[in-house]
Image (cartoon, rainbow, N blue to C red; front, side):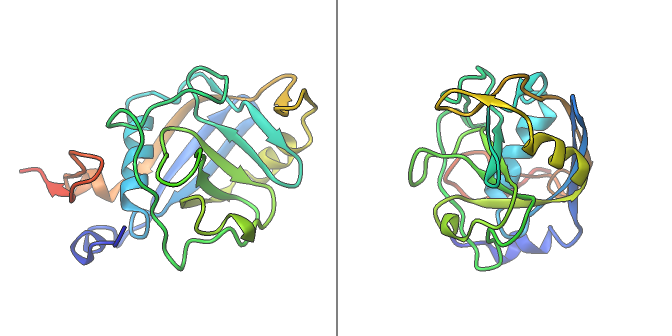
Length: 191
């Protein structure tokens, strides 16, 4: 998906949120300028409390921790529009360090609500999974998550950390009344 120059104008300030988890807080920057539809989806789900009480259901040391599924099974979740939406790739959005946020998917253009946070760089994921943010603080919490014991082939934490709630600190999309009314259409400014 090409990023609209008009939309980028509205995302000059940083967008940030804090994931308040059962292990502590992780503050993240959301890339509304380079992954705007994905940012809108994540923030709209967060604002509607869709992530509240959900577990991080998959944890693989030296790789990532995954959450955002209201069923806790790794098979559930919907986008804010219902169903799935397209990938967004940008040359600046890469899995080049610890703490990158990516959308979990089942293949091309199958994004819904699930997301993951990397434990280290994962360049093999570039242009396969949408990068939409990065961790700003809460590194010790991420360290605690990485060493959690898991069980089974699905790497389910024995005591899964829970997203208790998400606080949105800065959201230029909302501040500028920008919405994505459909999962494929252009952004609109609400009057």
